Length: 598
Image 1 (cartoon, helix red, strand yellow):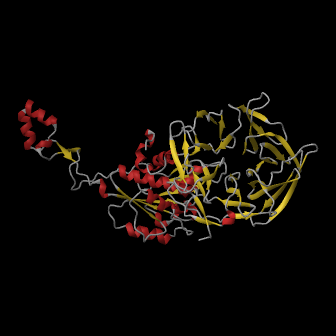
Image 2 (tube, helix red, strand yellow):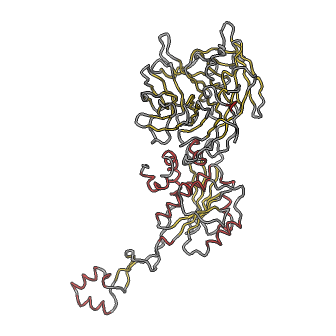
């Protein structure tokens, strides 16, 4: 992996991470390494090989006689002989240091509750920094868990070693007895004179920790800051403590570092009741916590998306407020599932609590003289539409692209048509909509705020008859994310993002099903289009100069969805399989196979 020059010293350790995570860890490593400082190599006279010269002495072999003494032999031979007789000649002193490789540096990590969350990322950085520090001094390195003084020390800082550290969690704080047991264990090891304890601030005052260097880590209790505080207390040399604040990577990178830093976990398949099999398109809820679809047995199936392939999965659930009535739109707001049904041109809104009870919370009626929301015919229900919350209103589209606002400060209980939209998404409490071209006007990206007239954010290329929103990778609240707009019937697309735009033409025979950014590409790489290959089983994320296969299904893929709020995507196959993946992960993070539960 090619890294910026300042990160080259940690290159072998960072190479095990995906490039984007390696780069996000870089600033943390640089600051922490500067605070810890180098491991001094001992220069003691021993039985080692000659390693240069480190002084002058009165005795020695004449092959080490100073050049100035040989000059005296040429110019004043009598004085040279007198100095030889009187023992006044000067010789270089040969240095025979004890080999640095005989030293061992040990790091002991507190795995208790005080180091969960953000401090664990600082511990990961400390593991890499201390390992590299020992390597630079020619010393061995090993690490262990403070709460387990009987366990063997781990010599490796590899992928498996890093996972072992991240997964070493205990509800118990390290006791004085455990710290004392570690000191007793290493006291007789002459070569182990560099011991570090990494943990919460309380460890600095533990008597058994005296003599060891302590790296204290704790959370900065400020919701506006993504930061941990660190205090480095050297155990020898009389150096004063050093305090610093470490700015952590963004929230998404921190979550990946803690849950699945190498994107290597493979999700074990779960069984999906045949009645829950998706029979419509897939839709991510706002925030990306749920995947929604109409179910084969009626109603709505909601799949809770685990944070990673290693996380425990919650079984899918069915919500059917009125059996036999079609759910036209669904979403999530304030940790509750929202379902919308259509009747007489109006919308009935149902709210599902976390306990599973369903209540009709509101009825929205079309304004006088308006046609209202068109009721889909029974034999052609159309796609399940996203139901998005923006400000005090809810928004949804009908099957033909009509945009509707439910309620609002000035129109509570009303259903208002607000024009036409090809695609919608929510951002920073507002609704973003792609309005197709028409009546001499170009296609536009609009922003709706409450009941006001929409704001035109920008004019869009092409007719805007098809558009897709995607996740830009940024957590900024004012970032509208990615937007892909089809330019013409020649299948060219324009991807617009915060830093610019890029025109792409998909491979012949493929279908564009989404837009996204590949976290594994170098920083600044343009996003790409998610393509369904002509075999109907392969999903490919393709940019201007790069291509990556992100999934292969066992049966033909029928539905694909890309979450505009995260790097996740999902697909359902003709065989009934449902898979959730992530552009930053190899393999699925959640799989559901049709059949009875295992």
